[in-house]
Amino acid sequence: MTNVADNNAVNEQEMMEYISGKTRASKANIELVLKHEQAYINKAHENAKGKDVDIDGDDLADYILSRKDVKLDELTVESILDAEMDYLMDKGHAGYVD
Image 1 (cartoon, rainbow, N blue to C red):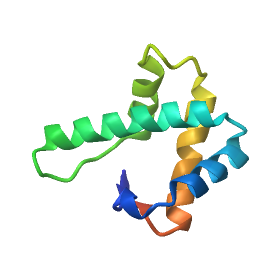
Image 2 (image 1 turned 90 degrees about the vertical axis):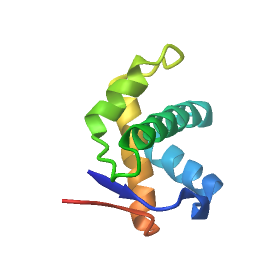
Image 3 (image 1 turned 90 degrees about the horizontal axis):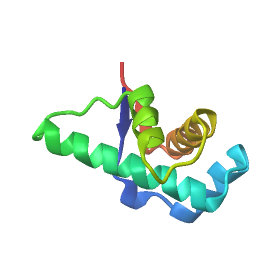
Image 4 (image 1 turned 135 degrees about the vertical axis):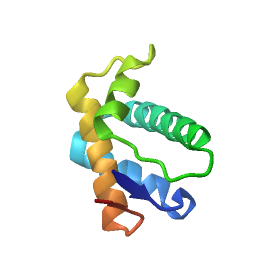
């Protein structure tokens, strides 16, 4: 389970450079993955009706991979998501919840 703080405080450009440096993925591919990730998280929050949301990383990756416009392999998607989480944790915006 992950706990992500308000993303408005995140330097998007710095995060993109961090993810790109760790994964060698293109900016377009990173943006695509993050766009679908945000849609998945938004939908989970809508369905939770104000309760805490538990986001499973495997389910998230499967969702992203199932999108028609995503032509990436599973390892690339997971690498992008992992690098994003590393960045957010390094900056104090996210963490894992037991």
